[in-house]
Length: 90
Image 1: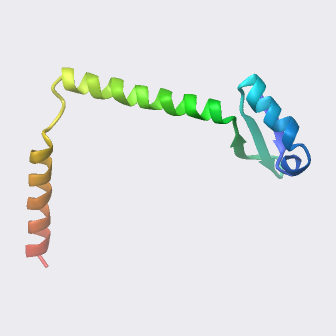
Image 2: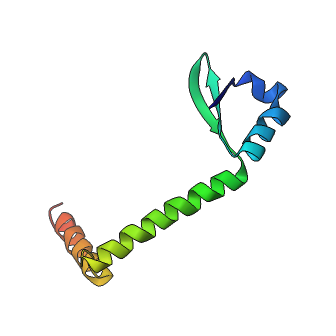
C-alpha cells in the first residue's frame, strides 16, 4: 500500500502517477496523517467499474432466476397509488 501526504501530489505527481499506472495499485493521499483521497489509474478505475457492473448483473440474474422481480408496470402503479393517497391526505 502506498501512502503519501496530499502535498506530495503537487511535487511528486509523475512518480505517484507512475506507481498507479505501472503497478496497478492505488495511492492513498493523506491530510494531517489521515486518509483523505485515493488516486488510481484510469485503467484500474475502469476495471473496478466493470467488476461492479458484473456483480450487479449477477445479482439481477439471480433475482430473475429466483423470481424476486416485480414488473415495472406494477411498481409504477403502486407508486401512483401511494402518491394519490398522499395527495388526498393533504
